Length: 132
Image (tube, rainbow, N blue to C red; front, side):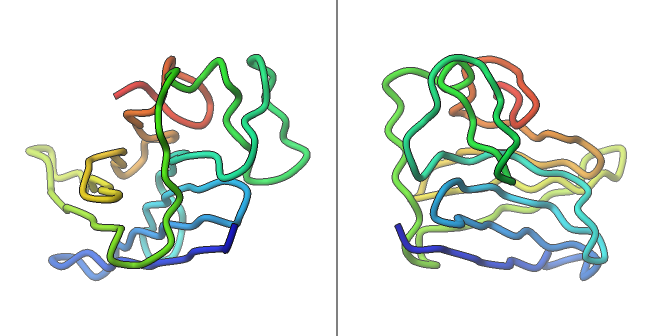
């Protein structure tokens, strides 16, 4: 699987950007504030999903194990910038939020200070993603 990297700047606050990265093993989205990661979320595994619920941190970033992923979920890896879109918002309490869209569908949400963020592919809350 080919690697993918995209940076998406916030249209109304240039201190923020979203980075979506698939390193050929696993894909994550990161919310950056002045280039510091202030929120992150697992998007999908690009390689074989590890069985069970053991989180292997030997390779970073880690793959999400099977127990934390919704069953029968089709996760199509990103291959082109046109497959990624981000919707930006600022909450009532002035916290920057970003919705990550892959292949035209909402898949994850990041909010400044929340680690991890939320994923529609998460079956249960874990260290890499919370259930959306």
